[in-house]
Image (tube, rainbow, N blue to C red; front, side, top):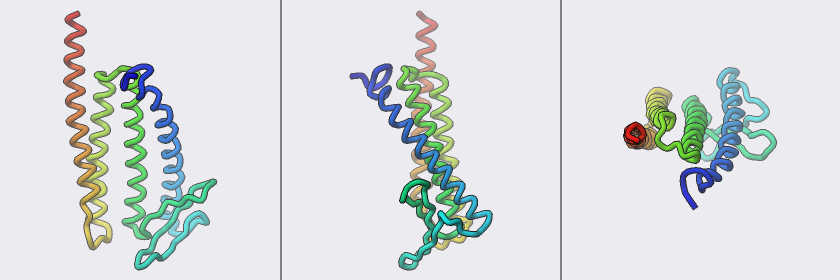
Length: 179
């Protein structure tokens, strides 16, 4: 069985990935709505609880129709990082799905794939910069550069892959002109 193209593993696996992406983005929209409500009003909704675990204060946002909760540190920085994390993962899943759909349809060296790789890589770099900015400016005594470092690394690797796909597109266009 083929890996890329029509009737391949990637072609059939894009459907479960689509369902997971839609589910994650819908639940992220719900949690982001609760976070924005919490930040604007400062009051706790019935779906938001605050607990003390050891010396940490945590805030839990409850998902609808389930017992699952999204937990973050109960501070401005913790809530902002949780909000930004949900947005960044949703963005990454959405653009990964777009790339997977193009690969599954045998459009590997197309301008749309190059654009999606570029947007995804720039998204990673922007997410890393914002996380670093939040870490350095909002009530933080100890800095953690691990997540921004990994986001930057992923962004630069995807820029490298974008260049490879772009060169493949140029070669494919030249071959199509020759024929």
